[in-house]
Amino acid sequence: MPVRIHVDRDLCDLHGQCVLTAPELFRFDDNDELQYNEDEVPEALAAKARSAASVCPTSAIELRE
Image (cartoon, rainbow, N blue to C red; front, side, top):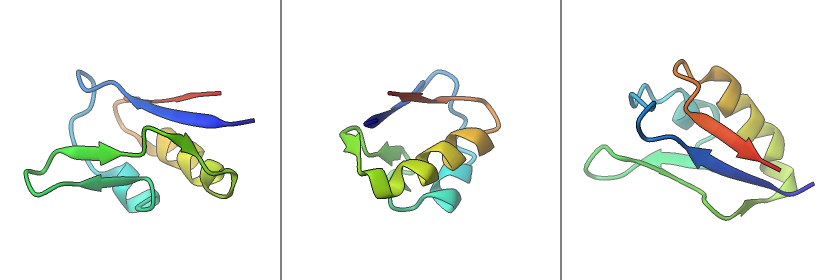
């Protein structure tokens, strides 16, 4: 089933655990703002997206399937 990532920017404190867990999907830009793949996540990276969501200390990452 296709997965899309949504980050609640009000909850995100920029801890960066998602970046460390799934750098293919999350990164910090030059202004230290979180950037992430808002398109459908490739099936090969769906497990990484789930891992990133599970390690987020503020539960800011929601996966929509």
